[in-house]
Each structure stands twice: as C-alpha cells, then as structure tokens.
Amino acid sequence: MIIKTLDIKNFRNYDHLKLELNDNLNIIYGKNGQGKTNLLESIYILGFTNSHRSFTSDNLIKSEKEKAIIKGKLIKDISYNLEIDLTKTKKQVKIDDKIITKLNDYIEKMNVIIFSSEDLDLIKGSPNERRKYFNLELTQLSINYYSAINDFNKLLKLRNEYLKNLSMNIPIDLNYFHILTDYLINKSIFIYQMRNKFVEKLNKVCPPIFEQIAGIKGFNIKYNPSINIETFDKEEIKKAMEEAYNNHLEKEIHLKTTLYGPHRDDFTFNIDSSNLREFGSQGQQKMAVIALKLSEIEIFKDFKKTSPIILLDDVFSDLDNQKKNNLLNHIDNDMQVIITTTDLDSIDKKLLSKAKLIHIENGQILEKEV
Image (tube, rainbow, N blue to C red):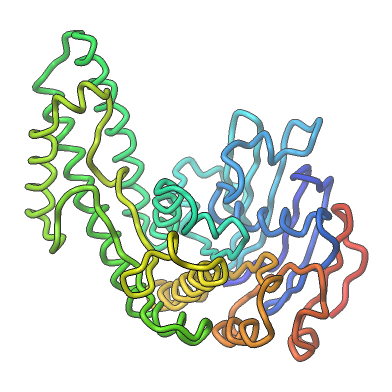
C-alpha cells in the first residue's frame, strides 16, 4: 500500500500543504523545527486517527485556527480517499467523502509503522507506554482486537465506579457487579491470547534481526501478565482472573480500582535475562526498538498480505554507517518509505539517487527534486 497524495490544512505549523509522494523512497530534509516530523505525524494520524505524540487535538490544530484537515489518497487493492477533520472537541473521519461512524471500519484501511525518537519510551518509559504501543500494533493487525480493547476499557471504567461506590458504602447491585466482572474476564481472555501470540511471533523474527543490526545475540521480548498464567489457555486465564478478583476484592474496594487484568500487564525487552531498561546502553535500546519495528514489517506482510507504509523520523542521527546500512537492508524496494533527516550527507548516495527529495522550511516546500 502507498500514500499517493497528502493534503494538510491548519495542522501544527502548516497553513496548507499539498504533496505527491513517490511509490518507494521519499526523503524529507531541512533544519530542525521546520515541520519534518509534523509531516510524518500527519500521515500517522491519517492511518490511526490518533497521534503518536499528542493525546489532545488542541496541540495538532494550528494556532488561532478552529479546524485541521488531513487528506490522503491511499492505494492498496483499490484506491481510497481518506480524510480526518479535527476540532478541539471532535474528530470526524471519512472514506471517499462518506462519514464513517465506526472507527474500526476506517482504521483497517491503512497500516503504518513509524520509527521516532519517542519510541525509546517503549523501553525507558512506563508500562502504560508499552501497553499503548502493543495495543496500537495489534489494532492494526486485528479489528477484533480493536473492538475487544475498547469494550474492555468501557467495562473496566464501570467496574471501577462500582468499586468506588462499595468503598463509600453506597448500595450497589452485587449481582450486576459480578456479571460485569464476568464480562471483563471474557474480554480479557481474547486480549491475553492475542498479546501472547504477537509476542511469540516477534520472538521468532526479532532476535536474528537484532543480531544482524546490533551484532549481539540473545535478544528477546517477554510478556508479563498481571495474573499468574503460563499456557494462555482460555480456561487457565479465566480461572486465574476469577481467583485474583475473588481473593483481592477487599483490597480493590479499599483502593477503588481494578488491580488485575490486561490494563496492568507489562512487556520487557531483554538480552538473555537482562532487562535492557535497567542494564542496556542507549544504543542497545535504540537497536532493540529498530529491531522490533523491522520485525513488525515482516509480520504485517505475512498477516495482511501487503506492505505497511514505513515512516523513519530522523533515525539515522545516532547510527554509524554500518548500522544505517543494516537498517536499510531490511526495508524492501516494494515498500513506501518516508524518511526525515537534517543532513542529506548522512544518507547513502545510491539511495539519494532513487529517492524523491522534499525540502521543508517553516512548513513550506522550498524545492522538489526527483
């Protein structure tokens, strides 16, 4: 799949920009703070409907403007005209000018994998950052996962409200509370199984890639559920969750929150048994994230039978020439790749000769070269 054209209005530092992209390699270059990352972010939002950098639309809309618009022509099996309209209070998505009310009908159209500086938070950040990341990637792979995680979050919110009422001795319908808990467990089973399968696939693809780009063996990703399970069998998960909720209900009432479930899980990135968050260098952490993303490309191609769109946001800045080449060797010529950089000299001349070059300054295209 490729994005053929991009049209953005009142987004970040852009008033209005229309851009036609190369089917393969595109390089966006310019000094820091000119809008290169914002351009990649707009493509990411066009696919996901959410930013990987901001939780609110306020930061996405250009100052003193009421609305931002992102449009793009996606070519997959057929072409789609995608559009996202953002206001400070509302988000509207369209396909071929038709308003889409179910986000999962929109999200399934476009797959994007982004490499950015924020990705280091996957390893150095909180468990919530890692859960958010794995949820987003699984959502792209499975619309059923998207539905399950949304349903789970709604049920979790309701259960937590009941726990708060119980803590304040406000009468509640205990039968409904237990039914709610059963529904939460049923949604959790699917989420646990999908996360486990995804990590298993990553651990088949990721270690050899990490070894090739970093020169280190033993890389692995570990899934750490908040409940005690080993086989991820449906009945085992159900039993473990029921025991956790039954044995710790008083504690949950006291703390007014649900203490067990997918919302409390974590993932660790390791070399052998050493957690890279605690024992890895920044270079090793960056290589781990790059290996993870490269692994996802292979999984997406296998699962979706098409290549995702690859966004590389200034990933070359801290890499030596060997690591740059190792990274690029894993990106096929049949994929659309969009790279940002401050320095064209940091990119191999052979790649430059194949790329569409886009020079950005203060939210404007200065020149276009092919």
